[in-house]
Amino acid sequence: MHDFSYNSPMTTSQIFILFLRNGLQMLANSYATLERALTEEENVLTKEEFVRTVTLSQAFPGIFSLNMAAFIGKRLKGYVGIFAALAGAIIPALLIFIFIAFLSTMGDAPEWIRHFLRGLRPAAVALLVPPCYKLGRDVGIHLSTVVIPIAAAILIVILHISPAYIVIATALCGYVYGRLVRPVEK
Image (cartoon, rainbow, N blue to C red; front, side, top):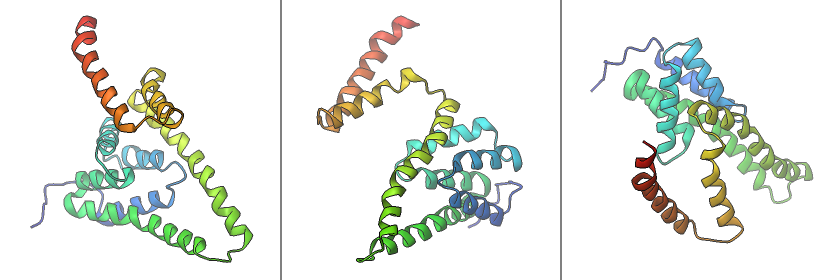
């Protein structure tokens, strides 16, 4: 059964190519590239719709970029759009993963490969900082909203407190805040 109620000006192949291109740029601020492509170039989503899609994608379990591809593909072309967007998003990462797996399984790998793999870790983390900063700015995250995650990380890493206890404590604090503090603020 086909769902023809999606009237996006983008074709299925354009959706596939957009997410393929985005997947190839996954370590080079792909979030900003995708936002620009969808909100400015193709004009199929507003910035607010894109931020809502990002927020919804983060709320679901799984890989963020695949969640985004699925939500945007569904929004643009229904289930066919989901398939096109996911295929485009998965292929580049799969090829890179296969290449790195091949390099890492070489028992007597040359020294440059070992150095490459060691250098890849901090580089990948560093390339995530700009899109995370932009996303945080777009959804209204400020210093006051990152205190709990930073405190949780410190409690887990330094004091070796179980993350389960931190989740429970945070939930209780949120409940108390919502029931006692927030009504007073209104």
